[in-house]
Amino acid sequence: MTRIIIHGCNGAMGHAVEELAASDAQLEIAAGIDREAGQARPFPVYTSWDACDKEADVVVDFSTAAAVDGLLAECVKRKLALVLCTTGLSEEQLAHVKEAAGKIPILRSGNMSLGINLLLKLVKEAAAVLLSADFDPEIVETHHRRKLDAPSGTALMLAEAVNAAADNTYEICLDRHARRESRPGKEIGVQSVRGGTIVGEHDVIFAGPDEKIEIRHTAYSRSIFANGALQAAKALRDREPGLYDMSSVI
Image (cartoon, rainbow, N blue to C red):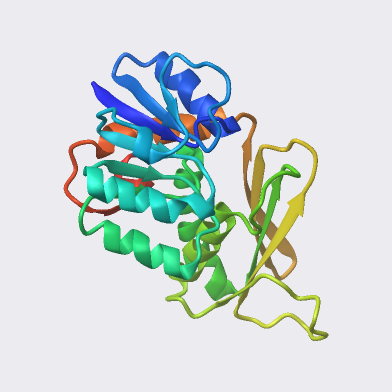
């Protein structure tokens, strides 16, 4: 049995994690942490870590970047493994994640979907062939209007996967509006679209001479991210301290 604490339990993803965990005999929700208590739940919800006295094995985090520094400190203090799903972290916060991973096991991913993490492998293979054949890589990500960070963490993961296939010789470009020039050869463009209730779409485009290849992933439900996070929690429970990603799960 893996006992979990849901950090950010009152958000949409927190509810998705709760629903799936409740139907998994290998999981037990020990508690939830959120800045507001919210409605009654079948597990205790605390508005601060100071009030939480429940023992657990792993924290599953779907919160906000502003809450991550405190989360890392608490997980290190309590020796809790951490599945870190929050995106939009600063470079300073990423350094804190790496430091904490020297003391506890942390699995961090810009996207917890098993499909997206398989897509990363496919994109690397495609880029290894197509970039040398003069194909231009572009990434377009589309999400609901309430998403706070842009581009998405997944889009950046995909851009980094493309760049890795080229020995990191490409520049990742997030904004072209201020320049008036043709597209540089070694550039990975990343564009963001926000609107409605779209759960998540990611398109990786390789545009070459007289042909175009597109690889797309579409999320129809948040449950795919919750499922990946819970699979990660079970995989992370008995790991040694270190920084892991979803390749250790799929």
